[in-house]
Length: 209
Image (cartoon, rainbow, N blue to C red; front, side, top):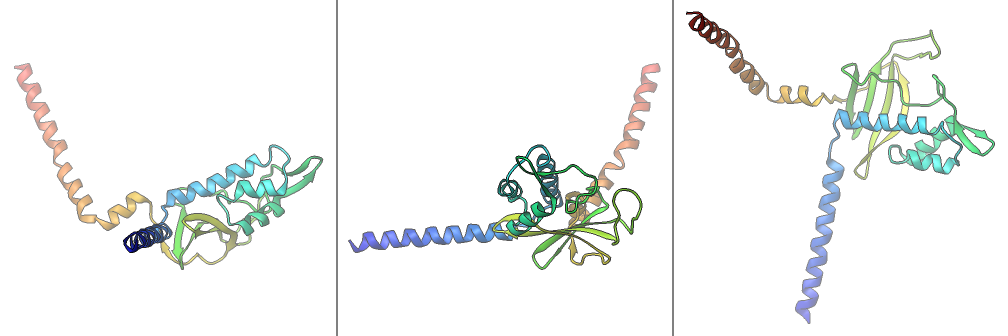
């Protein structure tokens, strides 16, 4: 009987250790630029969806929560929802009070990592013309890791470039980490083209003869 209890306790401890390790590994995973961009684009898609028909605020928050912290999702809904006959709805506008900025999602859009959170930002300078005006130089979105899911915690503006280590695009990051590999790859390929031309000319001359 003691052996049975010992086996059960051992199995329980092993299972607890496994799940703890899995949670720790999941929490330590770092996102790519592309995955963070996908989160922001998903929020923009949900925002557009919330302009289609009336809903309760609770339903609106539920649609945003996969990509936002709960408190920020509630704040986001309060800022954008308007009362209509059958509930609440977002109005389509070029200048919503609170929304994901119109990032270019290319080399102009940067990602900085600091203190366990990520800031997606882009320099836009002071803009006073058009339907949207900005008093600050940078548009920012702060993303935090919540139990393995990366969710938006804030949207803002700042005159100071966000601090932290820049996350590079995957290809640029690989080249930075392995410069010798990429350099050797280029040097090996460079002679191939002139050799091909020489072989082609020789073959053409033989054919004409």
